[in-house]
Length: 162
Image 1 (tube, one colour):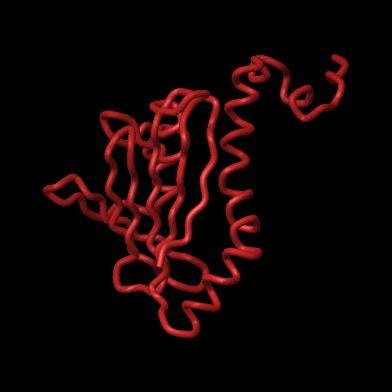
Image 2: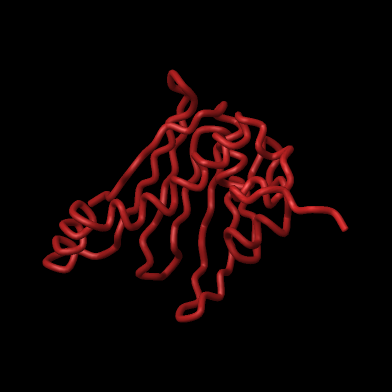
């Protein structure tokens, strides 16, 4: 069973990929940001996959992360019940289509309930917080809002100097 949602981001595929994954054509664009997104890298496999350790509040999760710039990222939870995640990026009219797919490791009745919940409620409770910040980032970037003072970006009037 796969649970997925998608959006179109108004930006070139390479920029969207780097923003979402923190990985560019030569690897991580910023080591600290990479560790923040995936956990601490502990091993790089011969095929380029990176094993990371994410000491979550409740679980310690090890991830096997693979990156195929600029079209795909896969995160597989190693020896864990956490769902795996795949992100796919493709160029479309108007920007980049970004699809996020979760692959739960549950089956049977629990899997069916999880699937139904995702279709009715979860797609929006999970999808919107994941996708919207990226879309908004690139919309602000296209408008040139990143040149504005930080408080102007938040819709506040500019601060008065002392």
